[in-house]
Length: 108
Image (cartoon, rainbow, N blue to C red; front, side, top):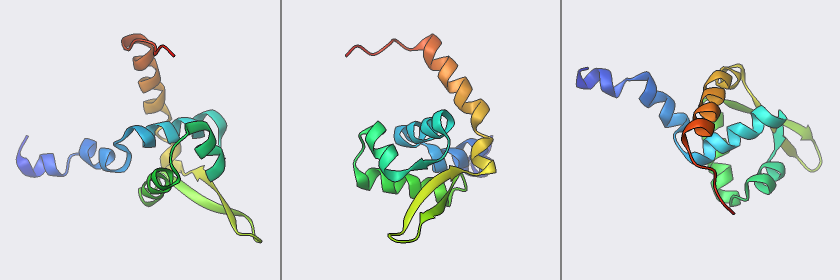
């Protein structure tokens, strides 16, 4: 594979959108629960607001999530998977299966 092909590799482009633990854990919540609100995600993930905001913005910019207003006053938003985000379902399932089969369970 030449350098130009590596630079434009689909795996690299995908990892630019989703390439960290928080993004994958955020996506897990959408596949488990459907649409989610910021506070719901923050509560279940125990992530800082700044980290969560940044990851949601990155997933939104990458076309994986979209925001929809559910309250006008005060303005409040919830997030939904786009069609592109829904297409990640098989990858998320494969990652879950791989994790179950090839990684040790964490002890509390």
